[in-house]
Length: 427
Image (cartoon, rainbow, N blue to C red):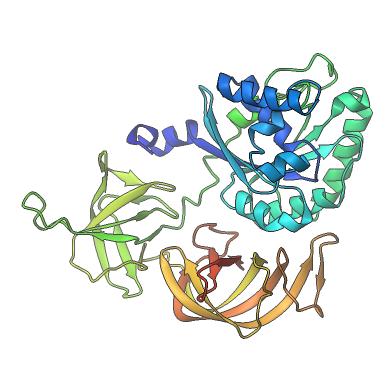
C-alpha cells in the first residue's frame, strides 16, 4: 500500500480497504450476490460478461448467471456449487474491497475458515424461503470464532416470497435469538434479491417497507478503522536490512508488518526475547520516512542502539509486553484428511517465528451444529474444530486471538509433506 493511504491514522480510518467474506448454506446465493455486486458497480469487463452470457445460453439458463463470475472451476460450473475460495477485487470512489467467496458445504468448512481468517466483515446469506438452517448456524459460529468484527445478514431471494415484510422480520427475530449465544457485537440486516438486484447496489422499489440502506452503501460506510488493535504495540521482525552499499554504509533496519499498536519516532521500545531496550531512531518505508506506523503497515524500523535482532524477534513497548509461553491452549480447525495425532509433532508458524510443537491434549471437539462440546470424542478429522493443548520447542510471544488476530493465530504444518494441516486461535 502506498503512502498516500497512510498520511495519518485518521486518514487511514476514512479511506481504507475492506475485506469481506460470504457465508451461508448451499444455494443461498452467495456467488450470485457477489456477481450482482460486481456487475452493478460496473466492475466487470465486457469480455467477461460476454463469456458468462454465452455459458448461460449454452446451458439453457434464463438470463445471465452472474454466479459464474466467481465460480471459475470446471467442477463448480458443472455442479452449480462453490468448492474453493475465490477472491475478487473491486473499488468504488469511497473504498476498496477484496471479496472472498467461500463454499457452503459441510465438507468445505476449512475453505470457509481460510477465506474468513483475514476478513473485517462477513456476509451471511439466508434463503428467505428456508430461513435459518444448519449451515447458517455453523458459518455464523465460525465468524464468531474468528472474531470477525462485523456481520451483515442478507435475507436473500425476497422475490420468491413476494417481498413480504413478515418473512424478513421472522428470520431477523430468529437470527437475533441464535446470535445471543455468539460473540458478535455488530449485526446488520438487509433484505435483498441477488438475482433481481434489489437492495444490492440500487434501492429496491419492491420493498418500500424497508427503510435501511442498500448493501453496498453499508459496505462503503461501515467503520473498520477500529478493527485493528491500536493499543498493544507489536512488530514481529521479518527481515534485517543491511544494504552494504556506500550510500547506506551503516544502515541496519528491521523490516516487518505492524501487528498492533502505534509506533512513533523517539518511542522507547523493548526487543524480545533478549529484553534489551532502545529508542526508535527512524521509521522507513519504500516511499520515504514516517513519523508514526500502525497496523497493517509494513515498515523498516531503525533503533538508536546496536542490538542483536533477527527474524522471529518482536519489537514491543517496555510496559506492555505480550505473554511468553511454551504451553498454549488453541482452538484448531483441522484441514487435512489425516486426523490430528495426539502426541504428534508438527511445525508451527506464529507471526514470523518457526518452531516445532507436540499435541499434549485434546480437550474437546466442538459440535458446530448444536454448539455443544463433545468431551468424549477425541477423533479430530478434516473440517473439525477442537480445543487442544500444545507445547512448543521455544517460547512464543503471543496475545489471545480475541485481543489481537495477528499475534493470536498459528498455523500447523506437516513436517514430512510441508502441507498446512490446521489453523489455530490462541485462547
